[in-house]
Image 1 (tube, helix red, strand yellow):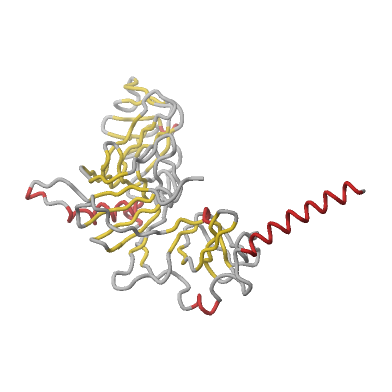
Image 2 (cartoon, helix red, strand yellow):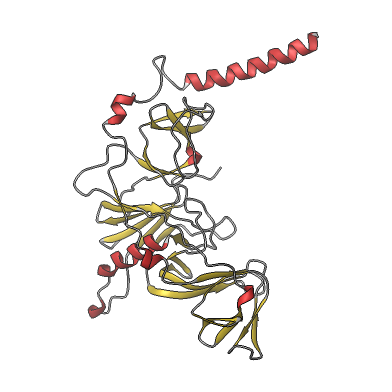
Length: 343
């Protein structure tokens, strides 16, 4: 019994210390802004891009798993074999049990997945005439938030869907991590949101229009001069295929292009009709990604993935930075950096 008592005492001591650490992060009067103070600026004053269904669903995207054969026409001899790998194609035509996925490229329909639905997430235009009163962020998970910094999620807090835009009213550090106040009695761990952190224009950036890519927060921002005008979530390269840091320039772009690499290797990928692509660092590009909805997290082979809506906006916004009549084929500067270190 004495041993049990000692164990219980130790457990209570650990719990008390944990609660004390959270409380120590706050003043005796509590943490954060009051509900009344928050009400004046409850939701970010930004203008989300409109999602255009005609743009989003103008292709019939499908996935193919495993090894597959490509034919010049239905029922013709095999032309080539691809895969296994991360393979997505566009179906342009169907003929009985066959589907055309390119010029003189046919595959059997039975190997195709159902039609892929691209992400409907979209970034937001930022106000030009006035500064935002607080930093903004996007929630990366469905969540309700905690009542206090470092506390458990509260079942009676309002439910927020992933990709909800929020203000960060107050920041408190608990056990080496930041907790953000995103509403009255609503606190979230820093890993639960992606934060917009505008940066000063680097000296090496020599274009009026330029883009910053924050690899830590997974946020891209478009600038005109020193003014941020648009921000959104991205998916950059995984640890084994990192997106390089530095200042680059868009040097070529395509409304649609094929991306393929690592042939006959475990990480082979074959992606048809990649939309709104702007290459800026050798084979690394800003481009639309119709094959996932994981924006806000790293997941690419090095490229900077955007939703189709956002990639389309970047593609057309960048147009005025080119001067084709003067032979200028150099597009906006792209500044890739990291505002933090991955844990």
